[in-house]
Image (cartoon, rainbow, N blue to C red; front, side, top):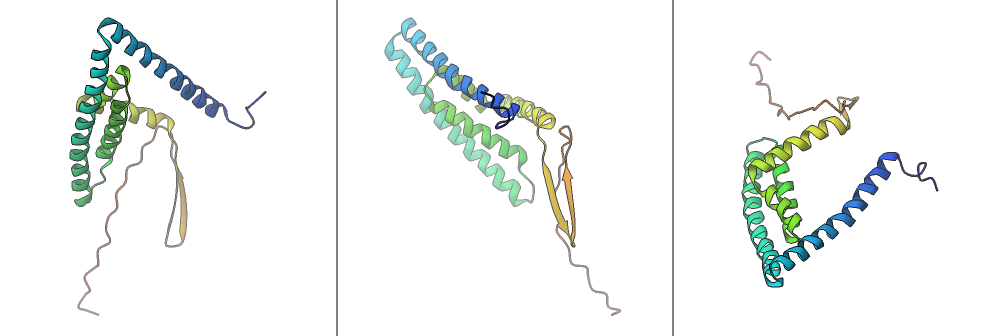
Length: 172
């Protein structure tokens, strides 16, 4: 059966990658937990999973709160909190990984909570996005509509300049 006309090549690749991840990661986690239980004891394994879940939740909560404060401060001063929003997303992902029982997901979750590791990961994601993400924007100003499509290697950064009232001249 050819799924090509219904789904594009890229969609099939993404589905295959997700399917592989949803099968291999839980099996690897189960293997690691059974190995740790065999090497130590069932109680050490259970305690490790419980401890990393609680510690990870507390760390993600504190870092998430400080990142939220940073986002609010930047928005309050009129800045776009792009980097802080990326940090917030990564901290959220770290919290989800740390609440998932397993040694591998805990390791990745803790790495995402370390600011230098998170900065390294943000740089890699940004590099990937510059090469692979394309967007189209349409704006209408004074009745004139313009459409802009970026190159995958081009990043557009913008900001809003507030319109200021011109002082009225006394000559009128």
